Image 1 (spheres, rainbow, N blue to C red):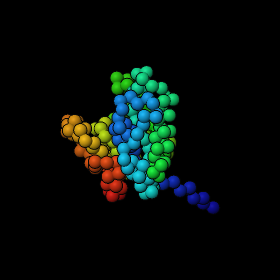
Image 2 (cartoon, rainbow, N blue to C red):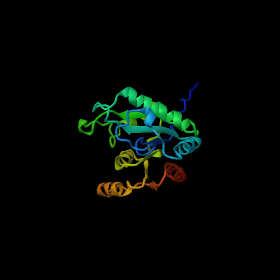
Image 3 (cartoon, helix red, strand yellow):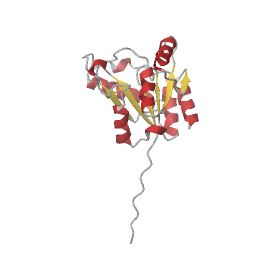
Image 4 (cartoon, one colour):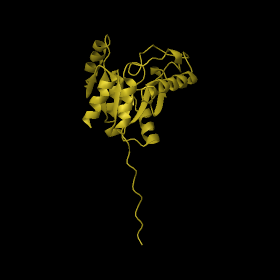
Length: 192
């Protein structure tokens, strides 16, 4: 009698999101969770991704930990508040991954390094080539490109010219550009 091998579980696609400057205003080394505010429509956008079967994973650089500006416990409180705020509009983040190192540390987990994305893919059984990353900086798109993911740039007023120059300098063109997180998510989902 022949026994069939168990079927491999299909891997899920994910929407990877940056935190500061993408989901919430970048307050430069945010330490106090009570100061966290979200951009309009973020909760709806993440709920839409979930409704389409995507996992939502936040990958963020938090060098303030190594620099002594705040602690790992502060980061955890901010992430808990972020999910509390998202829940009010039906959104949520399934998992948070952060790099606590300063850029000079030279680690693989700091974006545009890919270690945190790879760890999330293993932990959550994600399919990176069918996934996407949404951020406000070139390092978000660069990490996504290294992993073969689609990339989306959210542009905020007063920030666009500097970011566009960074993208040109590195020769990276995002797959999607939008003026809101919700617009970017809708365009990514339309790409399939």
